[in-house]
Length: 300
Image 1 (cartoon, rainbow, N blue to C red):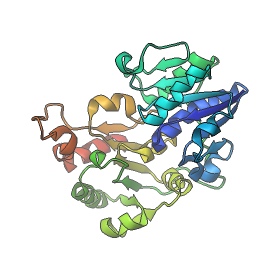
Image 2: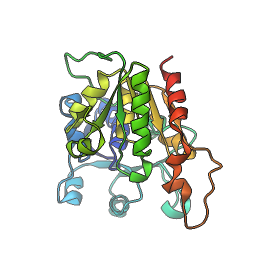
Image 3: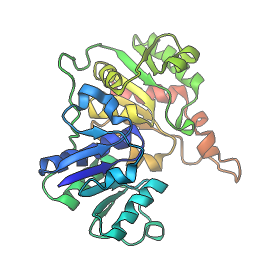
């Protein structure tokens, strides 16, 4: 059977849904994972078939025998689910299932348990819907010649994300970098060329995900916001610390392969109506010293 696997738009989402793609391939299916960013992994994902979205996306999906969708509540996800009305087999993973919003579950659906990480939920969902024994492996292979944690005490810092509300304040990242240098670490920021000019000169530019994965794989440690590179670090068994905005959400969304550390603001943050302090100002409630203290847990 020809399967189209459709993750949400994030890099982390795509890496996690590749668990299901790999499991379906082991079950004997021909699988294409459709995501605009995955082809940028290049040789890291050369054994998996990945495709960007074409302009005629629904016509493209119709060329497959079945679809596995990560429902992210977007208009596209709702349109794909509606293909069931034409008796088209659409399997759905619901990370945030709500009966009032999504309707009753069918035998084609799997609602994630928020007591588990996304990685574990995806593995369990693949087993539940498609049988067999699924693992957390997703088909991402290190390129030949690379050396795991090649550079001792090199610490990559990823200070950005796709959502600015997930970013710990810039001045705190810069202060953290200075403190890490005093501890004899070699902190390097992972930044695009435009971001590099306004952040720091001592940075690694990673225009492709192939280069990003390589940089993470050969580094000793990783610190970053709740974003895709943290999931890469987790998958590649790089000790990592993730700075998250919401402890409740991080139960589900934290990197779920190699266990690292997370730090989130305290739950007592006031949230007056209209100010939305928890969403807009959470980073000011996490001190640089508390991040450094949590980082020391992963270097033990």
